[in-house]
Length: 303
Image 1 (spheres, one colour):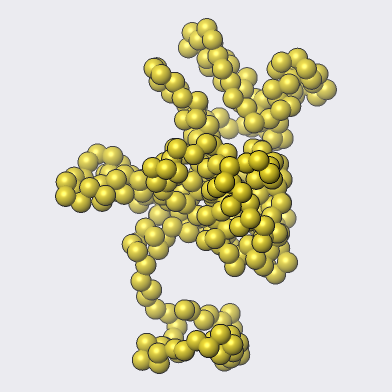
Image 2: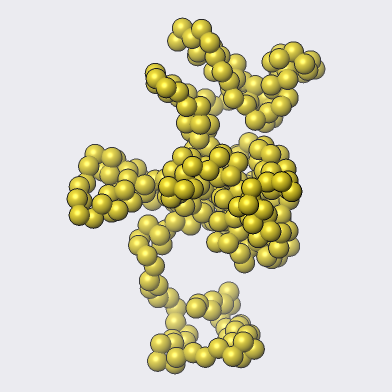
C-alpha cells in the first residue's frame, strides 16, 4: 500500500484519511514493515516489463516473443525474433510517452485494440482538442481467449481494463471510442453466457459508447498503427502475402474522409498488384453504402 501526497503539508491529513479507512474495515498494519515520510522507494512487481507496462502501448504484444521463450523453460533459446523484439522495446523505452493524470470531474475516453494474441487499451483525457494518454493496459490471451470472436475480444479488453483501472472507472465517466457494435452486443438479452457476465460486471461503471475519431497526438501513433495492423491480420487468407501500407495525409480530414481515402488507395494498390477479386472490410456504414451506390456523396472530398 502506498500513500502519496501532492503537497508535503497534506501528508499527515492523507495518512489520517487512510488510517480511518483501515479502522473502518478493521485492518491492521505490521509496523515492522511500514515506512513513513520517505521520498521514494522500490516496489516489487512480477518483472521489469510489468513495471513499465502502463507506459508501453500494447506491451503484451511487444513482449510476446519473450513470453513464448519463458514458457518453454526447459528448452530456452534466444532466437532472432526475441532479439528483434528486445531492440524494438529498447528503442520504444528510450522515448516513453508522457502520461498525464485526470482532474476531478473529467470524462475519460478509452480506445480498444485486439489481435489474435493479445488485447490492449489506452485510457486518455481530452484537453483543448488534444488527446493525452493516462494509462496503457495489455494482456496476452490464453488458448481459450484466442478463440473468441473479434467482438468478444473487444468486450474482454473492456472488462480487463475496467478491472485494472477500477479507481479511474469508478470516479470518472468513461467514453469507449469504437465503431464496432460493442454496445449492442453487450446489451443483447440472448447473447452468450460470458458476454452476459461481462455486461453485469460493467454495469457498475458509468460507461458510454461514442464513435471513434482519428487519434491525433504522436504519443498515440503507435496504438493507431497497431489497430490498423489488427484489421490487416483479421482479413485472413489461405495463401499469398500481406501487403501493408501506411499513409500520412497532408490535409485535415474527418474520420469518414480518412477511411474513404484509405479505401481508394487500397483499391489502387490492389489494382497495381494485379488483383482480380477484392474483398474490402470497413467499419464505416457510410463508406460501404456510398461504394455500393445506396448513398450519394454530397461533399467533393468524398467523391
